[in-house]
Length: 400
Image (cartoon, rainbow, N blue to C red; front, side):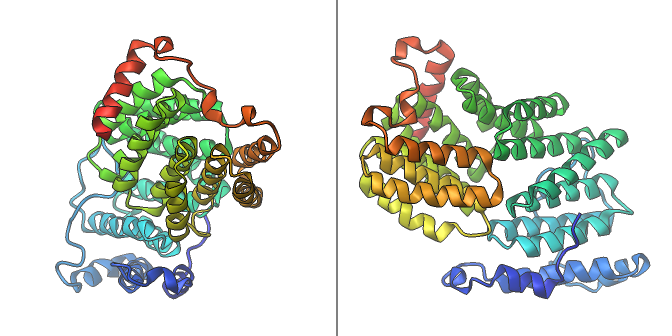
């Protein structure tokens, strides 16, 4: 696990693009204060930490929501160190949404150290959190090592849910690397550890839905996707699920319905990471419908959402624009975005993304009949199973 930056350096790294904060409702200075506080507590001798926490304003670490991926098998600890660590992690998740990944990493590292002596499951959950931040920073090898260490230790200690969340993290890494057998294995193992109706079941189902989409098993994608949708109340998470279910409609040639669903998902998305992924699919569907106005809007809005902090998601967005403009017949614009996506994918070793960008470039030199992966789909509704039909009907209802 790499050492975190000190709070000042982390702050300077995260806010170096000062223009991103113009008009932003949350300025980064508040995040710096919390990062500095967490770093300070973790740096104190263990015996001095409680006294320091008691000097803080009462509302500074007041319990709000709990962070994601906590141990579902254990009640929330009453230990003040465990509670402080959780609240630092809650703040770090807000930092992630603002793309302040280095401050988030420093904060969660401190939270893991604070919880280590008092809350072993919380410390392991914080390590899962660190791996997620590293994955978003593009440091996939380090993230993988952390996830694997959590799986081993959590299973040894009997923290099944913590191990399950680490397995979903490994599944997410497998998606980025294009390793489909590993995706299926990790998400299936996570589902086997998940309590019924839990957040872990939702995460595992979400991953299985994504795997089903990659192998074009549309019926399975709908079954897992709607189950995940029903298990979550978060608008952001529902945006991601609706995005994937709209992808089902797109592959089944329900292009208009898919586009309506994708526009709805964009409206629900709050974080740049989720927005960019949805926009990639929306761009492709917009191209098929010759919605060049929508393509231009996605291009302009995406420039505000992307950047070096989200290399994989930005690559997806660029590839979506390339596919969209290709489907709309604007091959020059398509080539430009495909070359950008290919260059980014090669820098970060996103192998499947690079392959797909090369495919677009090859198709742009071929005949018009070769264009558009949406053609690799069912020929009519008669070929769809009843499960798929009912799943698509529900998508249209929710989208409306």
